[in-house]
Length: 283
Image 1 (cartoon, one colour):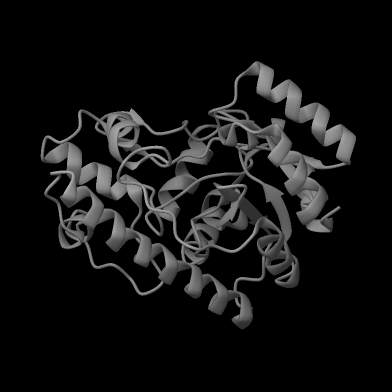
Image 2: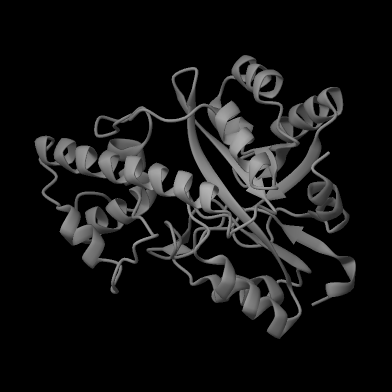
């Protein structure tokens, strides 16, 4: 483990949203991988950050407070990462709570759609699958549904569940009204943070990516991501240069389900810690 190299993974999820590890676990894993810094970027919540920060202070890993906000543009779900947001900003916390309510509404509709398709699972089963009480500022997501589906034999593994039922083009997917990427970027800035467009390669539409960059004007773009190949990395690096954007990297770590790490392992994508200064300036 060489912590002197100063690398950071800027995209990880915890039990606070749809990850499998506690926030403290993510920080310990980052330490074991030799990272100097790790961001906690749960979906529409910042509840995991205090625990992660405490663990970071204990083991000498810098924890970047972050969030991943779900938005909609061009008929697609678009995710916007926010770094160095003020986690006690009341207006921002209220806005995140509204987004979680939208997620819960989607969950109810997707479970109903799954039942219509013959997949007999309930939201109660999905929540029970957490093995603990669901806190008020936490939500369940599609990976939790997939877990139950695999356990009950409706899918072979997580990817199978997403491919056949839960993915954006699959029959059980439900789209609910969401804010625009521009609104998300504004909210993040108003909470003192730097907005970054997450995993542009996943959207499969570079024209839309350019539109978002021009309209929402994020501070950065996630060039290096577990689902990006070399061609995507080169394309989005060029786009970052063209638009003068901060280049970030993230594993999108969610933990292992059925022995398979979803997206990528912590530290599998990283950038130098010097990027953190750029994000703090938001330029």
